[in-house]
Image 1 (cartoon, helix red, strand yellow):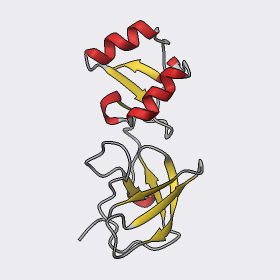
Image 2 (image 1 turned 90 degrees about the horizontal axis):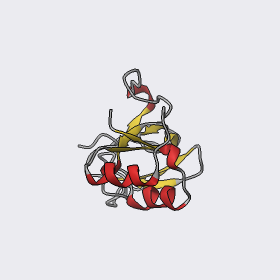
Image 3 (image 1 turned 45 degrees about the vertical axis):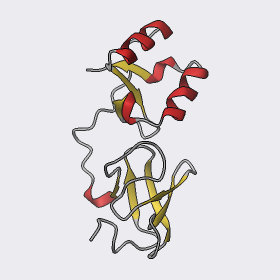
Image 4 (image 1 turned 30 degrees about the vertical axis):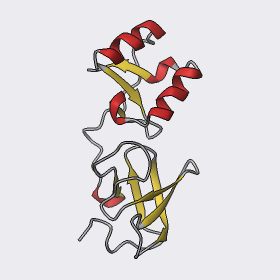
Length: 132
């Protein structure tokens, strides 16, 4: 029995990647059992366990809002903007973090590769930092 086995349309949720959202559809006989629309307009399908239908996620990234405690989450601003060369070096050493649209800092390996490449192509270096 999965975390979202009793999900209903309109339930408020929080995704570690996109932040606040709500369930807009429930599919009981499908691999992806719910569709979530986030405040930024993205719609993402999720399994009953809260694993998204995109990226390389193998663990739950979606929770009911009432179950989320973000008191220990890192939303701090970047202190130093990294150069492109430094970003490449840190990425090779696996010490690079990226800021997700929700504001959370995560290891760049856990983020969607298209998202990371888009940030690099658009020269949004302020969304990267050295692992703390």
